[in-house]
Length: 135
Image 1 (cartoon, one colour):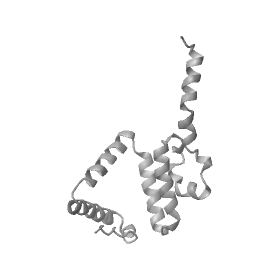
Image 2: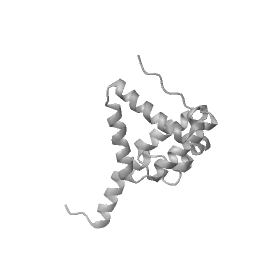
Image 3: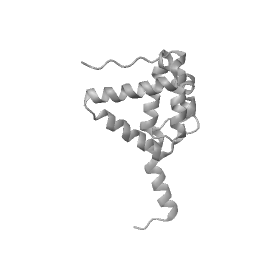
């Protein structure tokens, strides 16, 4: 059976409907979610469902943060939104490699990063408490 061009396009469209339906459009987010995720507004509709779910979890915790912590979230989201796909992939790989370190080394790397951030942003450093290691 040979499909025409338009039938092929229709089939591709119909097969992609579940993926389209599961992603959430920016306008479907609540005002509070939009406020928390404002730096991502321009690219929200192009994010994968997995990425959107990740950021929605961040938005859920956003109201409980201090104003300084909220500012920090916005700054980080803005930086993330400006990264190229290659830079994002590199960041993900670095994150994975740090998480694969033994707990003592991982904590040492995180402490080094916290200290570097504290030197660059002294006011923000006082608002963020290091996570206590799981025992």
